[in-house]
Image (tube, rainbow, N blue to C red):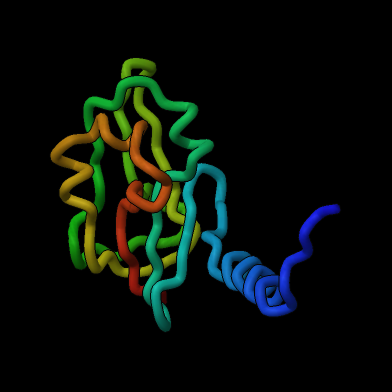
Amino acid sequence: MAKQESAWKQMIHFYRHDYEEQHAPMLYGDVWLKTKSHQRLLLGLSTQGQQNLGLVSQISLPTNGEHLMAGDTLATLTDDHGVHTLPTPFSGTVQKTNVALQATPQLIVSNKQTDNWLVQLKAD
């Protein structure tokens, strides 16, 4: 006979699943977006976007303080297949860029999705 979980464990699993669904990143093509706080967004390369890349040799990101309009180039990735551009889904001002990822661009293919953040934007 299979052992049943207690009501407390069932409730914890329910709320953990509910929390994970509410805080999961949204996907816009190959870009994921996560809300950090009011008007502050974190944008990165999705797992699907990783699978489409070869050996990445260069990542170009906008500079801090640069204003991007929706549809502008968020990042340019150069790999052994060519150059890939990622558009930004929202307008905003760049507050922070992932300089560690720019220093070692080949990590973007092997990192977990959460480590592949590219920029932090303050939305308009």
